[in-house]
Each structure stands twice: as C-alpha cells, then as structure tokens.
Image (cartoon, rainbow, N blue to C red; front, side, top):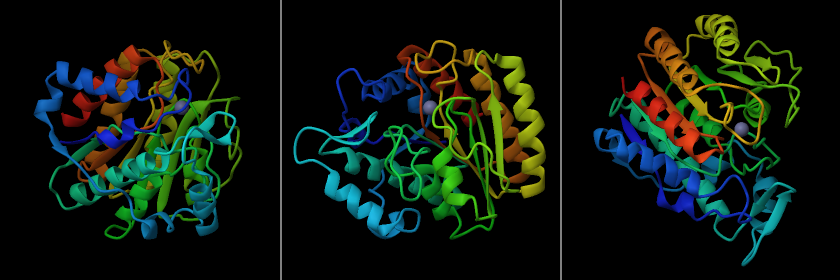
Length: 302
Ligand SMILES: [Zn+2]
C-alpha cells in the first residue's frame, strides 16, 4: 500500500476561514500516524505533473490563462469560492503528479493500491474551467496516465458533490467509466442530466442516510463495472457526505465510508486485479475527515 502526502500541498492557502484549508491534510496525516497506518504504508514522493501531461486533459489557452491569473502576492479569484495564492498551481501540480505517479506504480505492480492525501481537490475542474476549489483535475490526469498502459479504467466518485469536471473531460471517451454519487439538487448542478453509456450519475436527496446510499451504489455501480470491466479503479474520495460535514446535507456515518471502500475493493478484486488508486477530494469537518480517511486507508490496505 502506497501513501502520498506531498508537503507542497500545504502551501495552497485561500482565505483564513475557507473550509478547503491546509489543516485538512494535517488532520488526515495525524490520524494515519496515530493509527499506525502511516508506518504500515510505503511513503512515496512524486514530481509535479508536467505541462505536457496537463495539456492532454486541460486546454492550452485555459492553462495559460490560469498561469496568468496566479498572483505574485495576495489572492486572485477563479470563482467566488476559489481563490489562488502564489503557490496554488504548484500545489495543484504536485497533487496531480502524485496521482499520476501512483497510477504508474500500481500498474507496474510496485504496490497494489495507493492513497493520495492531496489538495487542492480536482474533480470539479473541467477541461477548460477551474471552479469549486479545483484547478487541475488530478483523478482525470491519473486516468490519462493509466490509459498509456491499459485500455479501460473506471473512476468512482463518492464525494457529496457531483464530479462534473471528470464527467466533462471523459463524456466522449468511452474507455473511461465515470460513476458519481452526489447530493442533488446541489452545487455544481452541471452534467446531472447527461445521457452517455460511460457516465453513471447517482443523485441522492438531502437527508439521505447510509442504507439508501449503499443501496444506490450497489444498484448503479455494480452493473456499470460489470459491463465496463476496468483494468484499474480510481477513486475520487471525498468525505463531505458525512453527517458532521458543514458544507452539505447527506447523513453518512464513519462506517458508511468504510463500507464504500470495501465495496470498491471487492469490485477491484473482481475486475481489476485489485488495483486501486484513491485521491482525496472534499471533506471539511476535520475530525470526521480524519476518522474516515483512516477507515478508507485501512480498507484499501486490506
Ligand atoms: Zn465535495
């Protein structure tokens, strides 16, 4: 089991009260240390994703505009909720680089699974739009890296927000199955009603509890994975569907995230030789985030 937690991901800072803050990674790492899991995993570092790799997913003029927007000091806003500081794009490039490296390692069988404790998150970043705390779509860049070596991958996203960026990027690329569960109606409300065989949306009403969440994933994702037979599973691991999370209204407990992890591990064992690369997306209550990330890594490690 490989663990990535690049220090550079702490350098991305938005406003002091912003929920997507460096303490999220500190809370996860403290939880993994205290549980003994950090020592039981192999720690790896990775280089930033290259400009050439970024441009395979994001448009060149969009990337140039992001570079131009990044401030020398203070903050610049890509949207009302998403400021950039001078280090934000470097942190985003490290986050994506970690996911891509993890994919390479897992496909080379230097570890069956990997967890990337990275930020900023990525799943709202569309090909030509940065939004919703996200700049580069790390999980999409990981999938792109995988497709150098395999023919079919699946991205499973249980963050409380829809993975609109990942859908935007892969909606016309049938080799990538994208399954996303999310609160609906809710932010970002893009690509909810899309009709593509490789896009599986699982909207859940506010107030949804664990049993209904589990039933929905078994109903929608199992059949999709069976049809797609991915050779690698990537996880957009957001923990903001937790009942203690301040940003959203689903009511999952810690055990539901462990269940989701075990469910995906089973799918990976069936179709993908057990291979999984998971990357952090959301999760904004530090205590719940830390506990659930520990359960997630424990489940991945097996
Ligand atoms: Zn989220």
